[in-house]
Image (cartoon, rainbow, N blue to C red; front, side):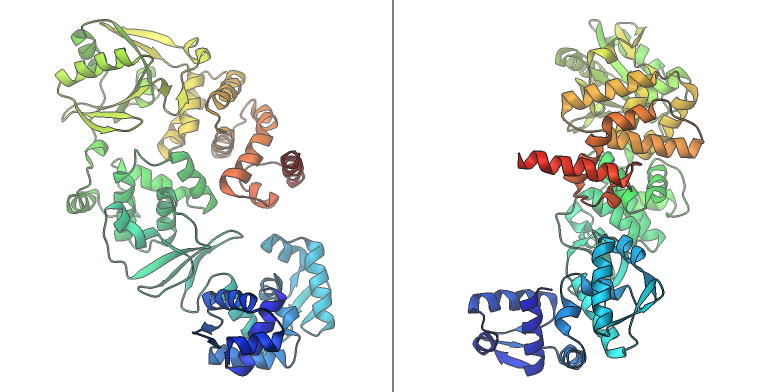
Length: 531
């Protein structure tokens, strides 16, 4: 809190009820200044602002008056002091408080030394502890919960230096923005949960965040299955790289992998049987047909090639290519890309004569058949990445009548999987690394060219996924050091700009480089921005 805010809070608590203009006279502050502070205190629940007057909540007011009679409240409530004190209900070292709150050790030590002189904290060897004063401790706890956006009736599900995810009884208002099950109705799945989930501080919530917050908050198989329903409904709209980022940040990777396996037909212990997911899908009009097993057979390409009226070329990638290469035994869809719109339209016209029907038209054209494998069609890109010449230089062609399919090299197939970053793609990436012939130097060089063409930094995603695979498979990834060296600046700045991570310790959660290196990159960036 700011100094004037604390002064106003103390006076209002002492008077219990006071007219706003009288408060201005006592403190010697302008009406506009006092009113703005009162509005902020009212929003925090520390006062109740009326028309021309302000009141203090009785319990909190008495507590503030009693503590202020023993200690200098302006020093206890200013800035981040309440957050520091809230960590001292048990003895704690300065470096532990600093790490927990992302505040420098020097600042924490100076604050605690000053407060020890005032008798607010005690120093025990290399640790500090809040004095054993019940009223002071209750006030610190209450003020901290309010400052952190946690109401008395709220239960914190997750907390870090940036966000709090909390639940309150259904209908109770709380600071923050609704998320998780509380906003499923916005996505066409109206439900009546027995509690509301909030994210604090408030921000615009994406569907990727809604899914991860739901995984955090879920308490039953029914709720996990509702998450699967939402995931299935928006699977082809979701930004899966962003989804994986939030899963890693909120430590929900394992649940996300189970969610992915479940919607593709695997029975998982977190969820209801798949037959009950189908019941929910019928209730909420969600199409699950893309996820039902229709075995891929290479004969479909011969059938299409025989029906084509002219020879066309396409690039095959994804699960179907892995089956042809012998890297997996089955896949549920065919991913195919075209260099020209004319060839794509000829292909579509042909598969429609075979009974395929268009199901969606976004960046991907999705075609389904009641008996045959689904086909996902891309134009001028392979998944998320553009078709650059160096990728075309490495393809291997296979002919199926008038259909010429170019199969990606193992190197490029792996890159596509790493950039896609869906849980099933990460599982495929492990297989390709184990069994394929990867040119790691070319993979890094192609990644950099793709970033240059798209103006999008995929390096953070690729590196973190490779580090995860390296750890799980207990292998050494060649060229990882080079990838790290080349893309360190990109990744640090990407985490800083795209996700708002400003503390090196938080960025280090995502990329395995020293805090000092990250600090140097951010400092250099700030200098360049000033220039």
